[in-house]
Length: 340
Image 1 (cartoon, rainbow, N blue to C red):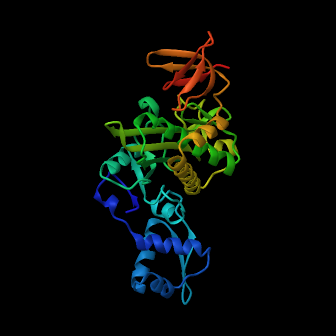
Image 2: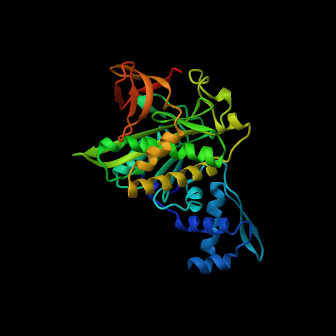
Image 3: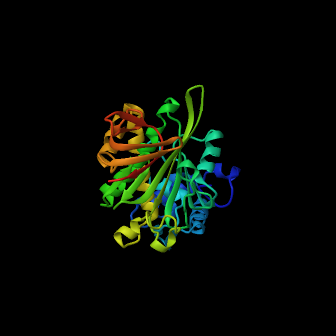
């Protein structure tokens, strides 16, 4: 099913195409009634089957109006993110042809990894209302309260060597930052490699995990957590001073399903171009959106730290830091602190 609760099981692979097609038809009717007879004819099923599908949609939380001799019309979607609803109103080439949604999971990354190992299609998306064990880079915990943000993972199967996978982290951050900047008018910036910030505070984190063999990628899980409708009191004390949300920045609530659709559409655009033309466009956009380049930074790594001026991105996505002696050092991993 497209909407699920609890743990991963075989029901995740069951699709309900009739509900999806009826939902798509009613959405595109833009508030007009569509008769049960017309839907019956369009889909080649009985009017009873149409009625049952509408009843199923209502049970999921969709408001579907009905009127004698006129039919049905779409009135409203649930406030929660429902995979079926995202699929029905998403015109993409690769990303989101299948969207599996949950009330709660330990981590969308783990669910996506399980589905990827079972052979799910590229572009399959996992999204949850909340995560009990959400994680960020270096295994850190990611706060994922229910009904406040977008916590999602995407299964990718790119034909690329494992060393190039970090570029997909950059692509994910670019997709989110562009949506926030161009469609919601935030001054969104990217702090190397994976943080999207607004007014210097973190609003989104991106993460990629891969499974590879013999220098070939089997699959990549690209994940992001976007803070949408949190208020300040919802953030854990340890991140309250450095985190923000769309609601905090604008003083208004946002339609989370619509925010999610826009990010998936932009991700699809970026990923299709990436597969066809390489990473040049992603690297250029990352540079344009960066709040790291040109700044004095300190990069903390497992084996020590590097400090200097962040000058550029290397072709593999590494940060090039000019050290005090003028030498240029590429840094492939670490936590960046902007000193000044």
